[in-house]
Length: 190
Image 1: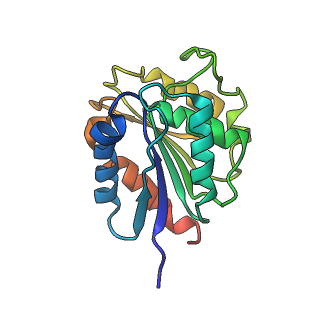
Image 2 (image 1 turned 90 degrees about the vertical axis):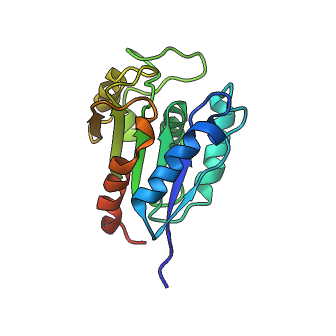
Image 3 (image 1 turned 120 degrees about the vertical axis):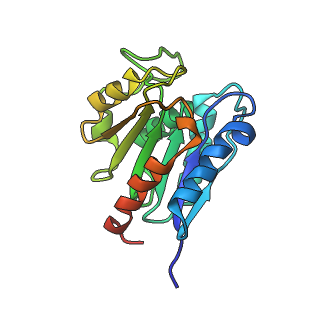
């Protein structure tokens, strides 16, 4: 009996995001992946006013429950906090992939923040050998598409996917994300 591959999806921030916005992304991802995947979609604390420390604690709790071969996906501010949490403390399991969607870059050239700043050596602080995918819609009016390039600068191993005509929610179509996850599925033992 084969176990379903775990996907941990970390939502973005803003009032109603979990139930009214990012749930559509999770649905699209599930449809794109098909059978053999289980998406965990926890509600982050105080989604309308994301606190990086509180979200990092919640994310680390979710990471601790993952098994080898899991994929972690973050959207918007959830992606920025997820990648920062992974750089600060790698998970106890072997990840199959890290996926960032419309992630704001917090640091030099990106968004300023008092709470945290992404390290300039981010790529070397991530779990070794884990593929990193950065997806960004070129019609995103919330987070400038140039933030994807900032991530590429600090995560040299990242594969950047620039999607023409896609907005901050990638038009609620994660088929490209599902393809990237599916393409890497056979590379990591389940």
